[in-house]
Length: 114
Length: 114
Image (cartoon, rainbow over all chains, first blue to last red):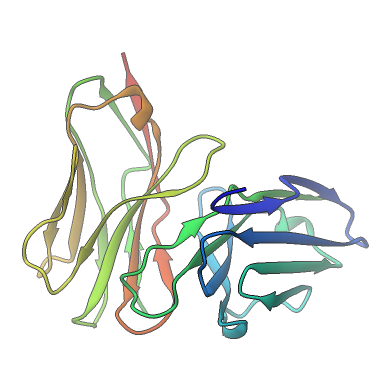
């Protein structure tokens, strides 16, 4: 596998389910990000991890719980979601440091909450 | 807070022609970076081109170039000799020189006709 991978690619869940999204990067990066992409809205940054430490939480509801066990893996644990949480969830990675550094994106997980 | 505005939800261009996508942003910062990302249908978002605000020279990457007008806070993308593979959503993004947050516009869907 190369680049940034995400699993699953598609997920349908009920509001009472618990599920997790997984992201893995094979680029030797040390910063990882979760974004939410909804139709007709700008991509929203959710969380940022630098060297496994969370450095940004963009006022995300607690029903979304991130986990970064190491610099290569990032999870988003989902619990008691709402239908408005249906969206494409994108993971990205980069080298930490200068803002010039390019973020590399994964293909996303298409989440549908029933 | 910084904002990014893309006023063209959709654009179309004929193959081999030139098209310009508009982007404006609002910031009180003097040092920052601007990016154009491309998201083809059902494929990963990739970086097209980036510009450092302290550089007056407009960035160029093969058929892609930008018109960066710092005083006007404008950052348009010009695609020359358009190809069918250029069809995608194009996102303009802003990143402060300090911090991890990448702020995106709502995107412009580009169609390329043969």
